[in-house]
Length: 278
Image (tube, rainbow, N blue to C red; front, side, top):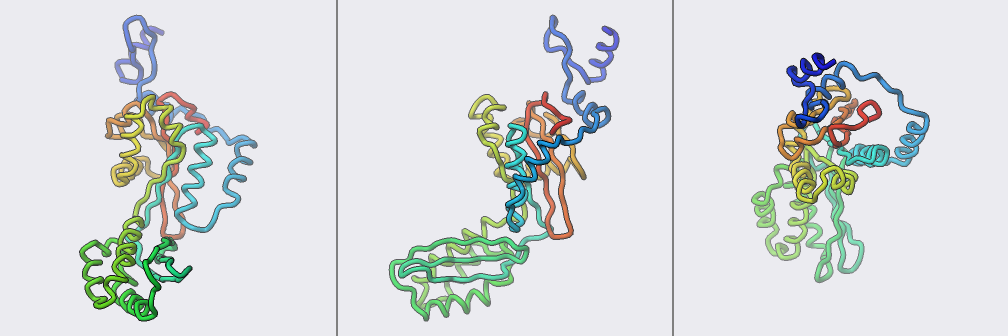
């Protein structure tokens, strides 16, 4: 047994934390176990019922589905869960409307061609005139509708405002809101559920904050998830490529469908956790 343990240590699958300690699996050891040795475990009846109930009231907004799934996964495992939504191309503005909802209130509605919707309530200092509304409709139709969200840069929107002429003062806050709202619509988005659970596994606020910052930066986190490939898999410790996650493991599964969307749903956890169940 001692010889076997020594050989597994030489292979980098086990490690001895200190001289008088036993052996524990390394990240490489856990990877071998998950990839080649782990038995398949069917979800229990209670787990299936829980997931069915959690997803029963889901709406049809594409962005909402992975986020609801991540929330259910976090509750089920007690771990922080992540949901990543990726579209094949930058979304285009399909519809843009400005609706009066009160004497000094307007609602801005933006819908993209991939089904995402954003709305924002705007307060205005005086009544919004029919002439200003007509100017907004005309310019929005020509300069905003059909453009991808990444084209609506600050410089581009400034050139749009310049075309409003005498209505610039009235319309500037509205076109600024369009710029800010479009910036929220990304090709890639990463959602975190269970922030408290993240603090629990990290042990301190600074480590948790660094991981949250990595998640918010989106592109690096998405690139790391893409190492998983199709189906369910895990990325261990240093394999993530980020010091913030060296002590953690990400277990995630890729999803895709006949529509424009694909992405990942998974959890962030300590290296030692119930891999079969998760």
